[in-house]
Image (cartoon, rainbow, N blue to C red; front, side, top):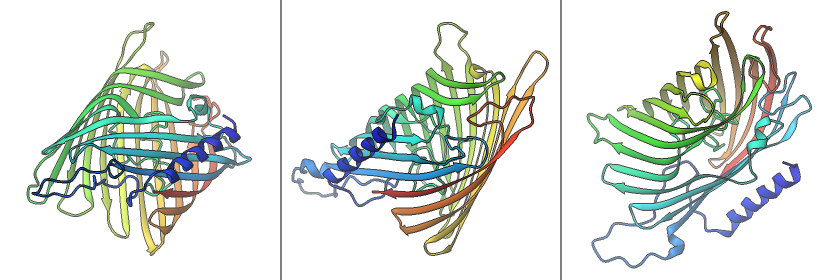
Length: 380
């Protein structure tokens, strides 16, 4: 994808934003249909009022000191870009259609060859009925804290959500999901969801003999997730299980399983979040253990200091014995909020291990590089 074509897609989406009526909410926040309860027969709602538009834009410059990583190079890249528009159309208080299209570019990352100029990432019908709701279509995959906000720059403390937990090419399921919210008990609230369908996995993975550009379809993908909100506002814990089978005509169909534990404590001037993921993925011949912890403190009204630590271990069984690949990323940053919907970020990371854009043999010592990202984010 050329930079000229990439910017053309950016301008196309930005023009679409200015051509449609905007709602006053920030992307990723709870939505309102705009309908008011009444005991009288309501007037028909104008079609224009049933539409709401949300979106986000993040533009960044990124550079790596030594080894190319996540599309960053030693010469620096300005083609770090995330842009999306989300359109909701409410049929009534309980029924709506949601569509989200996205354009993104991650520098020189090999994943760019999988990325179209515009990608349809969500397209589903949603129905609310009492404490339940259901979605049918291309729906967000339930992965943890950042399931639906991972690319919204004003809602994540760094340029991207932790890649240990949120791989770049795993975002949605073509299928159906059901959600249930239990009545509060002594200040505790439980929310549960279950999804089933077909998904795609696209990523660059380090294998025993080299980097692998993975484009895999999982034809039976099941996800179950539970969140428990505590009586303390902003404190919640969650759990997730994920079972998926690959679609292939040439090799046995493996059952892959992962599970995740999540904890989130978000207060007015402080937040701490952590997630742990573990599982067996025979499709790629590895067991995986990954986790991260991140936190931030708002030291001044517009200024927040952030820190993040990520760990990933891939375990490869071989005839001569197991081989393990360990990677660590430590990052610190500053977020300056010009206003709630406009953020400036500067972050610096130290990445050590084997997960780079160039192959590092497992028998060799781990490599290290420093990289930094400066970004501008807005949501609307």
